[in-house]
Length: 67
Image 1 (tube, one colour):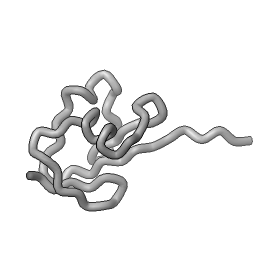
Image 2: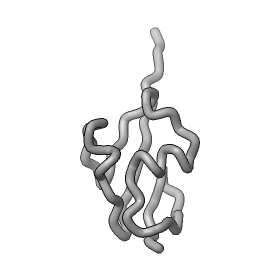
Image 3: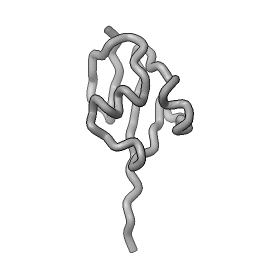
Image 4: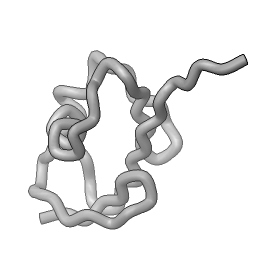
């Protein structure tokens, strides 16, 4: 188990969990978000391979239309 933060909340998850697996766990649609880990934008193409590490700060951002 590793401890990471997702949108500011602490979570204990299995080691080697990927960003795609976290999105599925949190029921977040991949098409609707950008993912930032430790203040670095992670390209969508890397999500299936990016394995979170102890203490990572993961943030999901959704685009919002407005005027």
